[in-house]
Image (cartoon, rainbow, N blue to C red):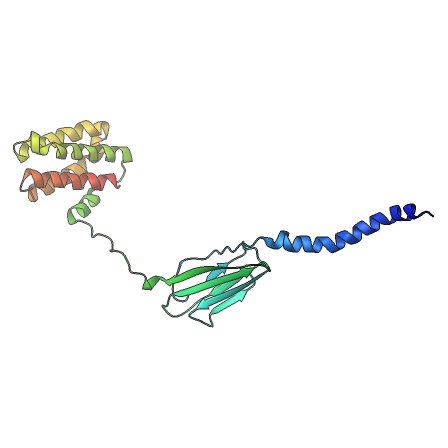
Length: 224
C-alpha cells in the first residue's frame, strides 16, 4: 500500500483528533468569554418578608454572593439568594462573577421600607368637598359630571369681570348648569338642590369666595 494511500485514509481520523483537542479550547475561550451579571430583586423590604434575589439571567463560569452587614438570614442556592431579617437595617448585596479571564461585580442595596423617609401624607379632604360627595346622584354618567364641572369652572372664571353681586353670579350659574346638563338635569336636581340649600345656610362672603367654591365643586366632579 502506497504512502499516499495510507495518508489519505488516515486524514479523517487525524481531523477528528484535531477537533477533539481544539473544540474544548474554542468553547471555553470563545463561547464562555461572555460575562453577564444580571439580578432581579426588589429595592425595598419589610421586616419578616422573604426576598428572592434572582441572578438566573447571568452568564458566568463562577459566581459569589456577599452581603453587608453580614447576616445568617442570607442563603445562597446557585444563581438565587434568599434573604429575610427581623431588623430595620439597610443591606448591601454584592454579586461577583468571572468567566475565567476577568471578574465583574454588581452592587444592590436593600432598603428597609420603614427606614425610608416617608413623603407627606394624604391631604385631608375639605369638609365642603366631603359634603358634595354625599350629595352625588346614585346613577349618573361621567360625561354629565364633566359637563357640570365645566359649567361651574366657566362661571368662576368670569366672575370678577361679569358680575356685580352674588345674586347675579348664582343666577348665571343656575342657567349655565341647565344648559350644560340638558336632559340630565333631572338626575342632578337633588345634588343642585342640596348645594343651593347649603349655600343659603352658609353664603359666600364675596364673589371671590364664591368663585373658589365653584372651583372646589368642579374639581370634586372631575375626580368622580
